[in-house]
Length: 577
Image 1 (cartoon, rainbow, N blue to C red):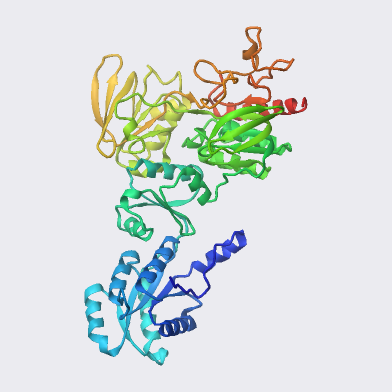
Image 2 (cartoon, rainbow, N blue to C red):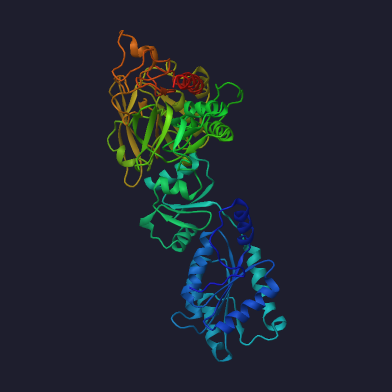
């Protein structure tokens, strides 16, 4: 393809300064000229640059096919095409066919044909058939009289309807696609700005065509640099949007597995005290707390703070002190290698450290209801999916759970949905939910609390449409219409990957400290004369903090505190080596 911009095309530079310069350059709207005659193409581009080069980016292509490819790249980068000038007589695809195809990609661009006098009749017919705005006769000398006035008019018409260029990441998908939801949720939780496009809407369909993909291939993610990724893995997506996925070193003082409140708390204190630290997170920093719409009982925030705000502050604080944060990395094993502790990733790579803190947190337990698994991401969600808030407008939302996370979600979604039902298995809220949340829920008319109730079935074709509620006391069943179901039940520890030497309780939570020696015996893997420290596991030098610890208090503040305490104990352990 021959696409000649006013500035030569180059590989995107790596430095921030160069990237900023590139952004300034490509923010200009494009004037594209397409002509298979090199001399005419150069002449048109020369005259365009002379008058419009300061305000517009002049590009040219030597065929209709190449011109469409140029337009696709421009559209995917978030730029705008202001004017297209195409020669009428071109082999393969003439100017009329090209402009007709271009309309599907850039409907707002103004279009003109370049034609010889003998083709005037055909040019006029094209104006009527494919909505060409103008035609220009060749030669157009002098341009001040025969060329620029026409282009000026085209640009003025385009400018009245033009939208500001946008360089956000774009997600092209279907609102009831589980994969599309996963991508949206991943970027939102990692605080990556993006714009969502439904491929069933005109703008979404246009961008999907520009990306060269089909509706059945969604989600398609278009990076801010204009690169389309079809159904990317979270690892590839993280790399594409600039998240860190690869450790900078091979050996660390401390590896922290999990980036929730406990992990980030440990990272801040360890890095601030001079330890070389890396945090490994499988999805997004913040864990379950990062999904909380409002945390109102955390010290120092009298007006409350959202989970993502608290997470972002903690993440930036850890990075400022020099900690590394790896995203979209799954840990699959932990090995003892002499004085070192090796953490292995799912792709076969690993990092070695002198000590490890396990802060993997917990996940919500799966809902035991018929049809629920088939509708995950299509109306059934685990945790608070803030990305779905707008889609819940004027809908009936059902939330399952009786703890603080469920209460916070009920209050949050009541601002968007027509009605919220909080389905609680227990007989009251007071045993598991903070009093301030119980009072808030009682004061909101659009929230109804259904105690002693469970969800038994979820139904719908391409999305959730209704579910069955059963009263555990009376046995009464009720089918209710609902388009969104958010699940906040139980706590399943993320510990299946740990080796057998790490002692866990019957529920899978990691046992630590005095609990390991409660029966007067030490764990089999314990080879030191001293007893395990307070948060130390059955493997020396491996500590645990936060919700994943057996008998822990499931609160954000306690998780942060345990993360800080774990670092104190890590220092004590490292001094022994």
